Image (tube, rainbow, N blue to C red; front, top):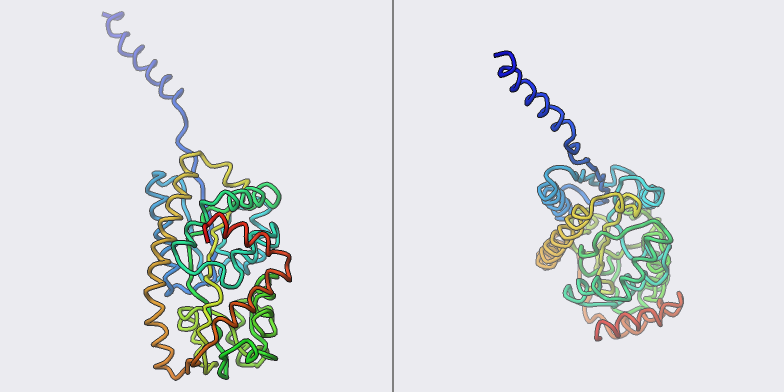
Length: 328
């Protein structure tokens, strides 16, 4: 009897040992994503969608915490943290990434691409992939996706602008990156670097005379309260990049990397199409609020002037190389 009763105990002990030999639970990862948009803007919901889908695909082991309104700090500071390997992410643009790999900045240049379809296709071009790998290798910045497209940017001022000459002497707010500044300069204005959060008080205090933004930006920021006119130049189709530390990205399991990238692209393309549909309605909101659209805008003059930005930064060949591969 003793021997018979001992067998279950022995088996139980073996099971305990076997359980202890099983792999530990999957490691958990957290990404703290920073962006400048308000919680009421479509980007916030898009980032939340991205986070929810990634969490589901990784069984809750990869969590994206979304921080709106630049709660984690200004963009340039976050990018430096990314370069040092921190588990933070940032919604940014090609202009800022061009500070590290010069050629990437062409994406933020005047009249580079005109449609969402072309903007999405850029990610799949071999030349863009080469530049993105250099960015990861040389600057420690990994692009997760670049499918978040805010829409076309226009000039918002306090007087009519119909041609580049009408911008002469006007101080137009730009983000602090060379392609932004040279683009605005080439299009006729005096660029003034300023963070997004400082635009409203900057306009109030006359530190700047205007800004170049999307219709949705202006509605969300209530900039119509301090500006009276807009000119539909559509000079930049702003393509945003979601970036993380290359070191942090490489630490993720490969299936987590795939989930992060694929769901980023899906959420980005969804919100980009949503913003394109919203643009007309937001334009009308500004008109209803008293803003005056410029008539007979000379778009050909603006397009021609815009080429000067690429020349000034030595990006003419890079621009043409991308357009050639794009088939334009």
